[in-house]
Amino acid sequence: MEPQRVTMIRHTLSGIPQHALPPGYSIRWYRPGDRETWLRIHALAEKEVPTSAAIYEAQFAADEPERARRQAFLLDPLGGEIGTASAWFNADHHGMPFGRVHWVAIAPAHQGKGLAKPLLAAICHRLIEIGHDRAYLTTWSNKLPAIHLYLAFGFEPEIRAEEERQAWKSILDRISGLKRA
Image 1 (cartoon, one colour):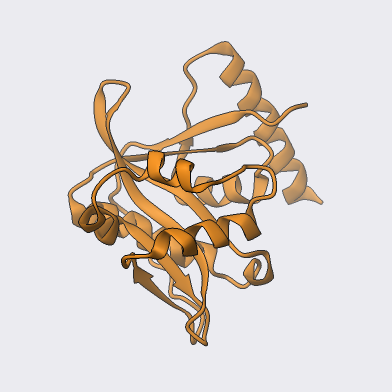
Image 2: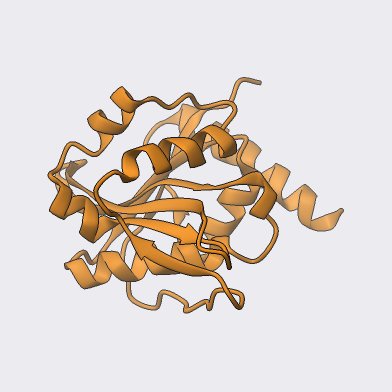
């Protein structure tokens, strides 16, 4: 079955959990020139979803001050950038303004080290700081660890059509199977 793009929604950002980064790791926000850093991290982390400078510009067309408020970079203990995520926005998600958890990626060599929860928490808290009270995200149906994380953070499947209902049934069955294994 081909991966499908799926949407998850959190109707309120209240109650976002806090998660501390492991010792030595830190988060910094966008600085001029970070487009290349973002591209490098995504090239390492995403073999199935192509990225390019054109995609970056299309997705993050806001000016640099907006990127500086919204785009995070995860740093290893030596200060190297090893992950990224954005506290982005959509003024018209089904007719309403929403914050958006956007383009989350951690380099494979650093996955499984307890970094995803603190990165996601930082992004959600930044959305709140900026003034958003709800958020959504999109991901792919084959990204089960990411979906499991988003569910644990209170994001729910957004189901608006029968095709989405079927996709989510399959996803949730597979996640349930992983938990039992």
